[in-house]
Image (cartoon, rainbow, N blue to C red; front, side):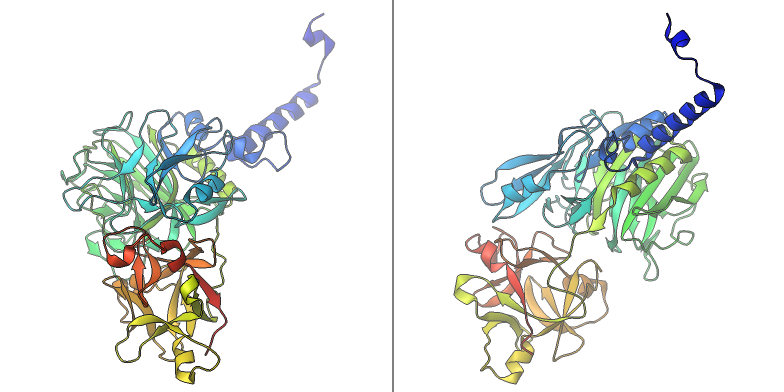
Length: 516
C-alpha cells in the first residue's frame, strides 16, 4: 500500500495544507512566529538566511546583539579588560540567539572593557578589528563594551557606541564586492546618536586606508553632515559614502533625503553597474522607504570598489564622527526590494528598545553623590568664582548657596536624547561640560562641540553601586572625582586622573535627593 492510497486528500484539503505551509514559511522568513510555537522567533530565518533565499547571500555579517543566521551559534565579539589585558569572546546563547550580555558583565565587573573584535558570522573570516591610522585620522581605539545597553528579543545586549577616534576595519577581506560588482548592505544604527563630521560609515572602502578617489567606496553613512560639508539644518540622513562625496541621490548632498527621527534606524544601500539605491525605515516598526533608486552620480560610473570593510570611520580613516551600531551585513549581488523588505520585517520583530532607565530622569532635580568610602558626604558642586566643578561636603547645616550649587536639573542630552545633560539649578542656562578633560560650569553656546561636551550617558555603576556617567563624545571616559576635582577619566589612561586605583569607585555616583 502506498502513502497516496492510504491518504486521499481532497482539493480543498490540499489547498488548506498549502496555505498553512505558506503561512509558516512566511513566518519563518519574517521571524514572527509567536512565543511558544514550535519554532521560536529567534531560531526562524534570520537576515542572512533571507538574503540567501533571495539569491544574494551574505559575505559579511556583523552584530554584537544577535546571530544573523538561524544556525549560527558562536562568538559575536571579543572584549578586552583594562585591569589585566585579558580577553574573552561574547557568544550567542544558542543557535540563532542573542548575545550573552551576562558573560560580559561578569568578565568586566569592577573595571572597563573595550570591544577589540567583531566577528564575521558568514564564514568568510571578515572580522572587524580596531582600525589602523589612515590618510585622515590617527589609529583608532576600541569602543567601550558597556556603553550601549539595549534590549533585543527581550534580552539585555550591548551595541557599539562609537565616539570620535574610535573605529573598526578589515583591509584583507574575502568575497566582498570589488570594481563595479553588485552588492547590498544594511545596518541598524542608533537614530539619536550622530555627528556632523566625517564619517560614521559601515560598508565597502579602500584597502590602503587612504582617499583613492571617486567611486572607491560604497558605504552607508548616517549623520547630519551634508554632501559637501556640514549642513547645519535638518538631518540626520542616511546617505551613501562613495568617496569624495556623500550622496542622497545622483548629486552630492542631502537635499533629496528625508530627515530621520527614529530611535533605531534601518539603513539600506545597494549598488551595481550604473545603478544604486538607498532605502531606510524605523528598525522598531513598519517597512522600508526608497529614498533614491537610479543611475550613479557623474564621475562614479563605473565604480572602483576595493573591498575593505569599515565601521565608524571613513575610507581614509576620517574618524571625527560618532554613532551607534547594532548589526549589519554585506551581500554578494544586488538584493531585490522584496528581500530587503523581508529582512526589515525580521529586524522589527527583534524589538530593539532603549535600556536606559536610571535615577537621572529628564525634568527632575538631583544632587550627584560620591560613593567612594572617603567621600560619601560629598556632592558635585560648582565654584561660582571660576566655574570649576568639584566635590564638596554638603549637609543639612550647609548654606543655601552651597545647597543650590549642589543641585542640578536633569535635561535630555543636548547631543543625544538617550542620554542627559545637567543644568545648574541656580545659574539657568549653564551646564556641566568637560574641557581638556576637566569639568566646568559654562553657558550653553549652542555649538555642536558644547552639546557633546555637556552630554553624559548614565550606565550601571562601575563599582556595582549607583551609576557611572559616560561622556557622550569620549565613551571610554567617565565622570570621576580625583583630588577633589571632577574630570572625565579612562581606566588607566595617560593622565594623572586616569589612575586605576579606586577608578571603579570614583566613577560611580548616586542620584540623590536634591539639596536645593
